[in-house]
Length: 122
Image 1 (cartoon, rainbow, N blue to C red):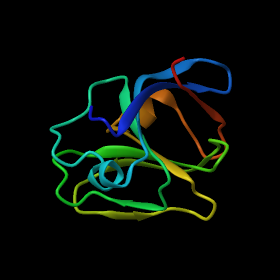
Image 2: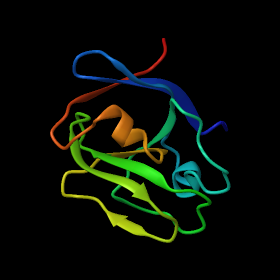
Image 3: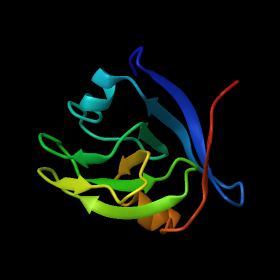
Image 4: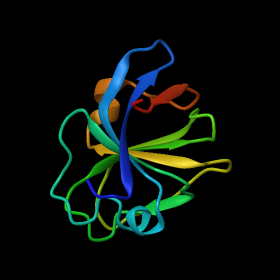
């Protein structure tokens, strides 16, 4: 983690923990870098890029799962097992994007329309 991020967690609308270690990436340089240069993500870890309107996986070393969220963290679109060298355009009203290790979506059953909650530490 670098100085341009802070840690949080993600729960679903029922309060079940989905991600216990979430990096919130909201500074320009860190948003542009995203997951570039990493070899992967540990299970239970992810990043929230905000604001974010679209993503790419150029130069990535691993596949990722992606969740596009509106300003209230409602799921607008999901994309699973996205390989390197792809561009994903966000649907209208996207405010932020969650990125996780591939297969996270399958294990956590997140779908369009779901309501998520980002919990920042106090």
